[in-house]
Length: 365
Ligand SMILES: *Cc1c(COP(=O)(O)O)cnc(C)c1O
Image (cartoon, rainbow, N blue to C red; front, side, top):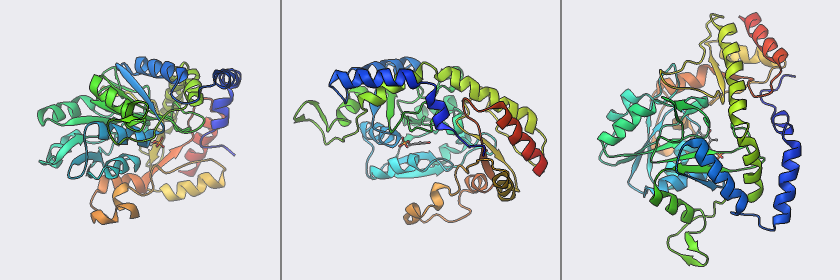
């Protein structure tokens, strides 16, 4: 069996360092929002080239707290990609605001900046680009549009730690940005975790208050906050993994280029394409084909793991029935859902596995 993703293999590399970190945290006697979180926040801010990083409980909370810190609430609209993981939309809905979907480009799969202005109304408060599958969105054009219309930018950078646009890191372009350390992400914890990055002092302060019940001083609550804190153990483990993130991302990039070369021109396959000036850290290597379902069956028969990202776009999910969207409303997102297939790619994947995936796909076509 060739796994789609082998988290055990990824994490066992760090076994000795993880055990030492566990012992340190155990003996510190302090388990939430302490020295390890402080240290990791500083390191992640440096990595992201932002003034501040704030650890929170998970990526969805990072989005919710970012939007909340900007004052997003009922009556506001937030522009989101029609092609994304549903978390991007859910954060908006959670605050009582309305997600307004904009279609992606069919080649990069990221939100199409040319379509954003048509979606802006008097109620629009935020544009939320998602750096999807590991590739930075066209952040410069998107920021220009936001500036012109006096809107905030919140990047959803859950999938693209280490990617960049014009050499400037993903997760550093927005007024405030969110990321996730879910185990499967490029920087994955051994449990849930997330972070917010920003250069803005006031937003940094507000998010730190929001994540801890709305209080800065214990038992004195300035605002109605949340419990969304990063724990010491996850922070300590993330510090260890952050040191190798660039190396691991480079390995992903290397295998992606092998797939790019070997699968070029095979059948009717469409391979991932980068927008000019955008880099990708290949959180996901997605191919597309009109024979997607048959290819999936063939890969299963040949014991090759694979996943669809994502089988149902948010606008067609039962959870969003109340918005009244129907099939055909966002045809590009729907096309990606119908033809996209992600194949095995992760740091530490065996060359023989990559070769077998390639030869099996070639054999299918
Ligand atoms: C994973 C993910 C999230 C949510 O992160 P969690 O840590 O699982 O809450 C948000 N947005 C995108 C695009 C994601 O891939």
